[in-house]
Image (tube, rainbow, N blue to C red):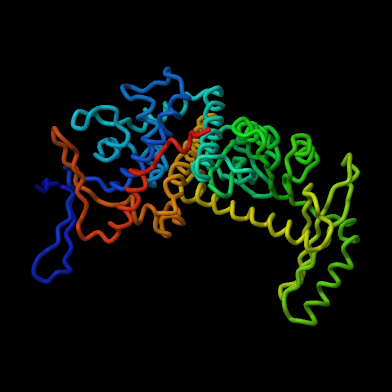
Length: 459
């Protein structure tokens, strides 16, 4: 039965009858697609273990830490990036199902915006470090899941920095001259086969791209080697990470690397002939020319000489000269240089993960005053990304969901209206029979129902 409401709209596009729109105060939700993701979370125990990293002394006003954490993470996945939305969602029947502690039908309202804000602002440095380590450990689990229960023999870690604009009086929000804005400058470490974000570390707005990257990298490396001591790890990063400190960290810890390297006058002189050949080849063929050269190079600040690969490119838009530095073996001939360089530029795929995290899941919504609260927010957005990413990492899913960004999942799975009926025996969720994406919803549900969490924890 439709409840009468003073809030209604009337449309006149039908010639005989008005079309009246009212709010329904019954057990109806617009986010029933969160239920398959909640089932996956129940088996993987992501949110439960994440909540265990937090101290019980955090104020809840009758709400558990786990319930509030699930409110925020599932809210982020559904597109509610801020605490303010939960003043309305606290009575939503689906959110009560995915986040509530009590039996259906006996639940009080979920946490309000003020309670969630207190929850975020009471986090401590010790809790943040536990959450960082937890995010890394779930990355190890995802590798096992993706590779059939065992860690692979080798893997790649991509280092990225991203600007995160701020618009208020957040602590450590500083003006960055290159980006011409007040911002934070998080560091992200991810792995390309699983697309899992292993580490997300919030930094002040004027931090150098490489600040803390050595410690964060070794934090991830140590966790991987604790699970498989003989694993081979290759590290990729742009020129912001191409510094002696990062070379030496990798060399001293038996890590291979390829980092972008900024051009200088000396390198330009050394590659003049290479660029000239590229220009002549383009003039002769009319096709883009890409030529490579490998050579030993030593800056004054380097303790040893290292291999540098030059790429000279000429096309209709002009010339393009780029360099990378690497410690990979057997890198002396032009073909070797092209192979290593082409592998290096695959790190651009990590930009898609950054886009999903920042734009698809609104990780830039770091609007708390306290820096540590914003760090906690970044980790919750990262957890939301990793959870959704784990659900879609299944070859049995339709391609549109395997490759789908958060907006695709919202449109085709999450944002579906449902009527919820709670009886003493079961909870019935009714979806519209005419909804066109039922097949995809069914596939996502089967993914979660059939997921075997033991494959994540196999030795």
